[in-house]
Length: 270
Ligand SMILES: C[S@@+](CC[C@H](N)C(=O)[O-])C[C@H]1O[C@@H](n2cnc3c(N)ncnc32)[C@H](O)[C@@H]1O
Ligand SMILES: [Zn+2]
Image: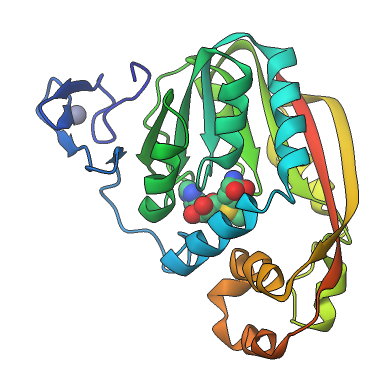
């Protein structure tokens, strides 16, 4: 992965035995599960997805309810590039990045996420996918201008870093929840609401760095088994508040829930 940079001194990283090493001697072990941990500072508790959240995400995504979203993300990426590096910022288990790489046989992928547990999955999600543990709010260990596309799916948005790592003419694909996303589940759990001004906040975070090219809303009604309800809640921000999840133990009927997201494409401004 030529684009990776040392997270201490920003020099190039080269593979050496079972690690990546920079010319100044900073070394980062390659985990046997296939990812590299470049973090050297603590991240606040509650930032990274936990083992339970990752297990819930893997099980829920495997059921295919979000497959049409991944399909649309892959379509957008294929319109934007045919090859090069696709960086997924907050990649989780690599579900979306793997679909993009399926569509682009000449591209490679880099999954960045602060959860090593999620990246164990991501590293196995596709043969052309590399994975590095990193906190997206810190300057990324990725060289300037190396990415053709940055993906950002339900994850933190760092506009200046998206811009820095993209090549001139590169693009950003953002998937975010719209107002009303999974709203029916509010009757079974105190959901953290998607605020009405979410899109405005996204534009503000990207302002000056990106221009909106297209925004495609995608809404459909899902029918979820009780286990799937527990998974979709358990893989989101509610999982950091276990007291909110106890009511879900008693759920024994399927529930309908509205999937409502926006898939937005942005062009990097020079
Ligand atoms: C809601 S999940 C979305 C994961 C994936 N994009 C998906 O949709 O399946 C949010 C992801 O962002 C990661 N994350 C949260 N804060 C982060 C940070 N500061 N730096 C890097 N990753 C972060 C979490 O570990 C988690 O995997
Ligand atoms: Zn170094």
